[in-house]
Amino acid sequence: MRFPAPLVASCWIFFAACEGTEAAARPDARASAEAGSLEARVGDAARTTRGVVWITYDVPVNDPDALLCCFDSFDEAKRNGWRGGRCSLESINSTFSSHSGDDSAAGRIHRTHVSIYLRADAGRIGEVRAFSPDCPVDAGGPELVRLGEIDAQASVRYLSRLVDEIPASKASRGNADEVIAAIAMHRASNVVPALAEIVESDRDEELRGQAAFWLGMKGGVEARVTLERIIDSVPLDELREQAIAGIAQDESREATALLIRMARDHGIADVRKKSLFWLGQRAGEAVAGELERAADDPDQEVREMAVFSISQLPREQSIPRLLELARSHRNPGVREQAFLWLGQSGDPRALDLFEEILTR
Image 1 (tube, rainbow, N blue to C red):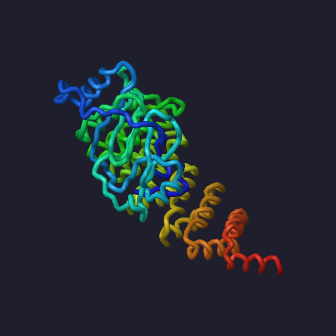
Image 2: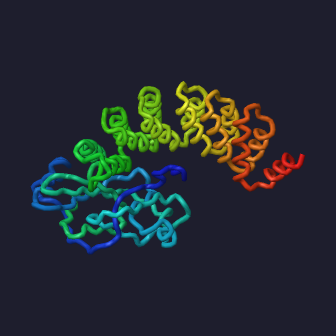
Image 3: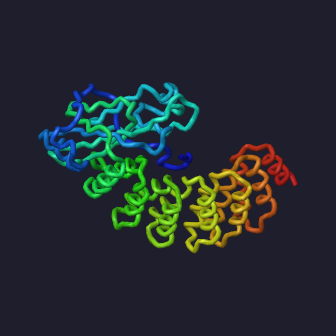
C-alpha cells in the first residue's frame, strides 16, 4: 500500500486525541445477544446505557504492516519507533495514525486484526473509528463494551449501512469518511463491492470521492473498471480527481497502463492533466516517454502539467529532458516551464544552460 507525498490523505488519517484516563471495560456484551447478528449485538450493547457507550470488536485487517494509533506529531512518532501513542475516544483533536511501511520497529510487526470502535449515544451509533489492537485506547469515561472477534464480511455489511446514518460533514463529531476508511481496512471479499457501490451511488460527492480513493487502494480489476467508469461518466471534477488518485495507488502494471491511456487519449483535458500528475510520481523510462509526448498536448494546462511531472522524475531522468525541452521545444510556453523547473532544481547542468543563454 503506497501513500504518495502530494496526497492530502497521505497516510492513515483519523481524528483522535492523546489524553485522558483509562475507562473500565466489560469483557463482552450481554450474554443474551451472544448468538445474534452483529447489528443485534451492537444494538443490545448500545441500549444498556442511557448516555454514551463505546462498543468495540476485532476483524481481520487487510494490511498487516499498518499501525493505526495516535501521536502528537509525525516526528515524535518516528523518533519513538511508532510506539507509545494513546488515543482518547472522547476528545476531538486532529491527530494522526500512520502506515508504517518503513524501517521502523512497527514496520516489523505484522498485525492480524484491526479494532473497530462504535460510539453510541442514547442507543444510536454516531461515530466509527479504527485502531490497531495494540494501540492504547482511552474511552474517556463512558463504558467500553467488547464484542470480541467478528466475521469481517458481516462487519463490512453492517458498516456499509452506517454510511447513510452518520453525517457526511466533517463539521460533525464523527463523519462518514471514517466509516469508509474502516471498511477499507477489512480483509474480506465484499470490501471492493461495498466501496464500489458507494462510489456509484448518488451520495455526497466528497463521500463518494473518499470511497473512490480507498477503492483504488484495494486494486484489482473490479476496482479499476469501476473507477474508469466513474471518470468517463460523471460531471463532478472532485470525484473524477479522487478516482484518478485512487487508480494511482494501485502499483500494478495494469493501473500504470490505464493512467498512460487516460493521459494520452482521454477527451477531457483535466483528466489528461491529473493522470499526468500521477504518472509523474512514478519513475521509469516508459512513463518518462509519455510525459515528453504530453508536452505536445493541444491543451496548455496539460502541457504545463507534463513539464511539471517531468521535473518530478528522478534527477538523472528529469534534468536531461528538461534541458532538451528548454533548448528546442517549439512551444514557448513549454520552454518557459522547463526553464522554471530547471531553475528550481539547482542542478549544475541547469546553471550551465542559463550561463550559455545569458552570455551569448
